Image 1 (tube, rainbow, N blue to C red):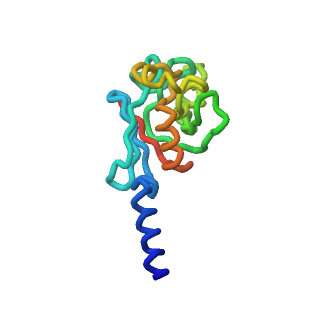
Image 2: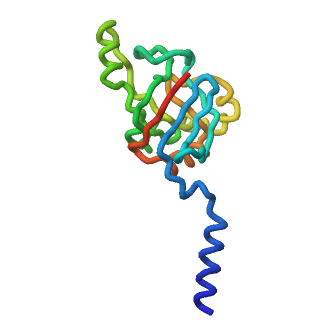
Image 3: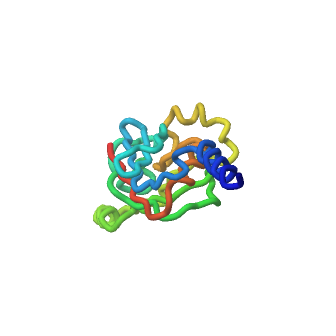
Length: 163
C-alpha cells in the first residue's frame, strides 16, 4: 500500500510540473530579423520568445552606442540578479575579433550586452514595450519569460545571433 501511494505521488508530481522544467538547453538561438529567441535542446525548441532589440537593430554591433545587438556566436557567461532590469544574463560580447575591429577604427566596441527582462518597476508595461525596439543593444523579453529563461539556461550555454 505504501509503495502504491509513493508511485501516485511521483506520478502526480510529474504531471503537475511542466515538461520544460527538465529541459537541458544547449543553445540559445536569436533571429533578429524575426524578433524571436529560441531555447534549443538537441533538435527540439523547448521555448520561444518574442524579443525587443536596440533602436537600430540591423547589422552587427561595431561600437559602443550604435544601438545594435551583436551577431555571431557568443557565450551566456553569467547571471545577474542585481540588474537595472528585471534579471539578466550576460552575453560574452565583445570577443577578440570584435575588439580588434573596434581598435582598427579607433572606437570602443561597447559591452554589457545582456538578455534581460523589463526595466525595474516597469514590468507592467511589457505588453506595450515588447512591440518596440527599445534597448541599447540588449535582448529584452517579459519578466515572466525572463524567469523561465533563467530557470532553463545555465551559464556557459552558447548563443547564436543572426539577422
